[in-house]
Length: 212
Image 1 (cartoon, helix red, strand yellow):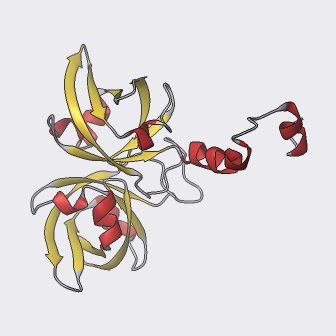
Image 2: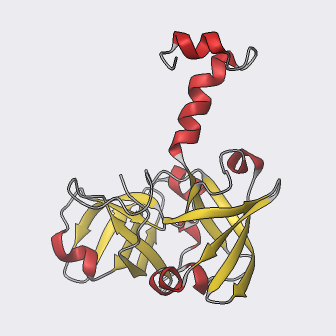
């Protein structure tokens, strides 16, 4: 599990692809300090498993489903990526619950400065937007952010200077693709309520399931 608080920006060193291989190698500094084989690292919000590392970089296998769901397949050597290690049991929970399992991608529509902040507007598909609520949480390329505005076609977040300096988001431009992970709580609620959609959530339903 992650929190969406980016620890550092790494750089793509190599992307090995072939008939039976897809390995992403990323240079980093801070996250290598206590890394182990098998550890989970969120790369642009995508949970990957470390398969090897040295003093300067780590590598992870990337499966086809991950490439279909995320922007990792578009990365090239030299590109910057957001990195976060899995949350330590005794660590502070500074962002929100982030699983590292990407729901899909969105496209940056607009970046607009407002005083010390920058508005970022992102187009997304209806199947993602249905889980997003104003003032709720969203992970964009692994960054835990608060949704400031939402419409039927897009949503917007406002980026403070610290987030802009410590992550890749403000280095992007309109048209760039970003990974999106919606708040997992919304998906669980939808799943649990699915059998009762025809009747809606009634007082009897709430009492039956221990809420009243």
